[in-house]
Image (cartoon, rainbow, N blue to C red; front, top):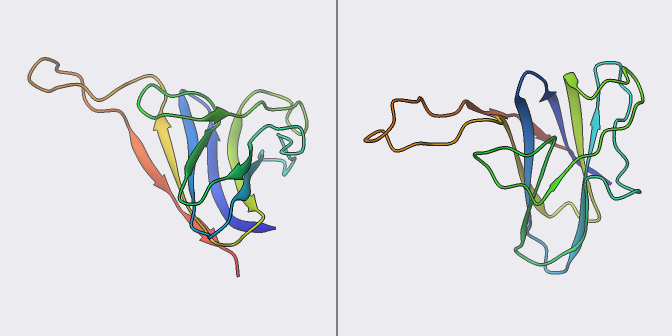
Amino acid sequence: MSVYIAAGVIKNNNLETDFVCTNLDTVAVDIGLEVFDETGALRNSVVAGSGAFLNVGVGKTVTVGTAATAVLHEDQTLALNTAGSGVGLLRNGSGRVVATSKNIACNAIVADKLHTVQDPAVSSLPPPSLAQLQLIKLP
């Protein structure tokens, strides 16, 4: 069942989107992420394992990203298919968190994939760009 939806999923110009979900139920649940490109085409298959986490334990948190980032930890990254635009990018995309229970809490973050947080005492580099992506919980 669909639990959350998001507009603005990005995989472009070194920006990546991570979804972080925690199982709040009293039993293990399956959690998955489906992403869609600007044409509305589904770009991954949770059935094939891309974006799918099976049997997520009570209280466990899992993270899936459109690609690996230097600043965050991803348990899994998505393998995009060639549907829709056919390119390995998501511009103005959307996402849908699916699960076997509505008792999950999720957040989404758009992050600069190349940079990490540096100690300002030894580095003049600015912190990486991070932005929260609004998720809408479905009834």
